[in-house]
Image 1 (spheres, rainbow, N blue to C red):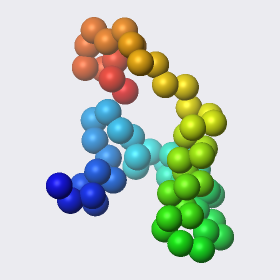
Image 2: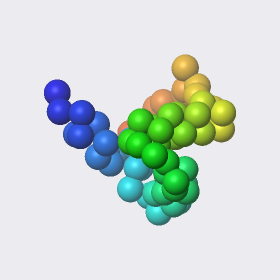
Image 3: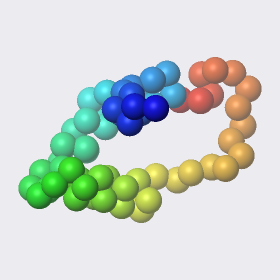
Length: 64
């Protein structure tokens, strides 16, 4: 598997959404390496994004 393909937007992952891109750019600002950028983004997601292990999913639109 090519890791770059995991970075592309998909139906369930809105990684190209303007608000998400703006936050990622802000988190990446001043990072000294791609690793540091990844660590910053990981930390933000860990601290600010609630993950539901058993979401109510009935339709395709529920995945977004």
